Each structure stands twice: as structure tokens, then as C-alpha cells.
Image 1: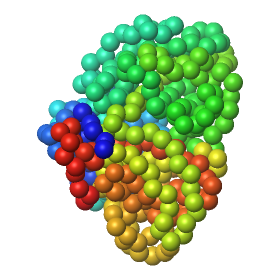
Image 2: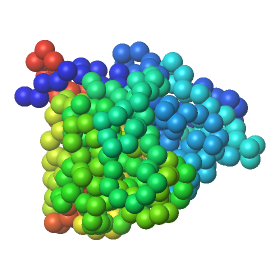
Image 3: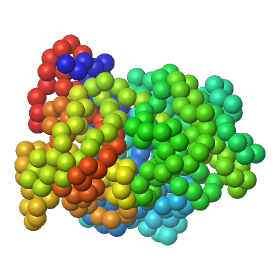
Length: 371
């Protein structure tokens, strides 16, 4: 049975839904079971509108110039004019209208939103000299999450940056802040060390020699300046390590079943959030959350089977919520309930990251039940 040191995952990761009022500023209170917490990484999206994803973290700070968007390769600050995160609060965060006199991406009247929030170290950072360059890190080693900011060397070649987790990460998402560039992502189950995917694109995994430099270990992430145009750029990296009963990073192979009988993926907890990417085909990054729920039954990929979550968003697209490939969130994992190529093509290979609603078995050995 899966034991854990984290009995209440919402102390480190939570999901908040709200409906916009049109006012500015607008404070959003999170609803963690153990009491609200100050988030350090906030990922927001309008649920039913073609609004851009917005990603903020307390290491880079707040303001119109700090937003990044997962569905675009633009520099920091591209999306803030339509509303931006103006403060990380003790019980959530606040959004404020941007220079376009709009708060559409946070609080347009009657529009619906979601925010995923992770806790790092309350915005307190420290210099880390574990790598060949000095990085700035805030880490939550209990939850296996760190935010790393760094400046690339001034010349081409491999380099390393400390991540502060104390264990080898399972997934690392990087983004240039100062220049246009992809959300280049490493996952432990991509295979060869220098395979990568882009959070901003549906493209299948690809290989590039030395993209991850010397690779990843318990203290550093491996990186590379491949061209002079990348030299001296500023970056952020979101680093995740697996924690039993709280987070899981893995892979599975699809079976193409069209009768709700796709593969079951064991996580050791009841998932709250699951992000899936097919690695051998050009398919979108699918974002599921149990709070997003189930759409009306209007086709073979929709319906109400068990705890099916058919409502999903796409990390690489600004599109509204829809059924991009249903999954069933169970007490100890998830199961594909669709033959959509984005989650269950026959023979397709997939990677995922998942965070818990609650563990399958608590730290004291007490099993929990499905919803």
C-alpha cells in the first residue's frame, strides 16, 4: 500500500475556481483543506473563453511585466495588459486590470476561471552555488517543488544550475524570460537523456544533442547555451520531484479502446490534477482537474462513467474548456475513458504529471475512499 508523509495534499497544491465580477483589483481566496496558504506558483486560465494562460511565481515577482503564458513563446510580460497578478496573498492572490484597461484574464464579469497553485518557500529565495553558475532558488523539499531563476553564461556550451530539491527531479520546465523562446521541458520518462518536449506546442518529443548538458542529478539541472543568441538570457525553471502519495510523474501506453476501457495508471492517490502529453505524436498537452468536472453527454468521448472528467483545457492552446480526451479519476490513479489520440491512441506513448486530492493510504496506514 502507498504510504505518504503528506496526508493533506492541499497544503502544497490546490485548485481554485471563480466567476468574474468585473472589478479591479480582485482578490482570489484559495480553498486548501488545511487552511489557506500563500501560493508561490500560480497558473490561471479562463475556463470558457479563448483567454491566454497566465503563469506567475513569487521568485520573479508580480506586476504587468511578469506574466508568462504556456501557449506562447513570448517574453515575460506579454499578457499582462489584459489583467495581471498584482500580489501573492496569505490566502491566495490578487488580480488587477492592466494597461489595456482590462482585467479580462482574471475577472471579467460573469466569466469563469481556474487557478492551479503550488507552494514553494513563501517567496523567500537563496543563492545556490551547487552548479557551474549561481542560481536563485526557493524550494519546498517536503512537496518536491522548486523555482529556479538564473542567467545563462555569456558563451556557448554546457552549464549546470542548482535546484535545491535534494533529490533528482522527475520533471523540469524551462522558459527564457528575456527573449522569445519555447517552454522546453524534460521528463524522466522521455527516454534518452537529450529528448525534450515543448509545453507551448503539440509537437512530439525530439532529440537535440546536449540540450540538457550534463543531465540532472540530486543537486543540479543540466543546461546548454546552444547559440550566441541564447547567451546571457535570463530564465526560470520549475522543478518537480516525485513524492509518494502526493505527486507522480510517469508514462503509459494507450490501447485505443473506444468503450471507456483505456489503460489504468496507478499513482498511489486520488488525483486532483493530471497533465498528459503524447510523446510519439503531435497532440496537445491535456489539463484535467477533478474540479473542472464532466461535460454534457454529446458524443463517444463524453459521458458520465464513474468519476469521468471530460472537461479539460490545453496547456499549449488558449481555447476554452472542452472534451479533449476523458479520463476517470479513481482512488489510486486514473483511467483513460476515450480513444482520443491525445490520451489513448492504440500503441501511443504518453507522459504525465499528477497531483493528489488525497493519498490512497494515509501516513498512519488508513485507506481513503474514492469520491
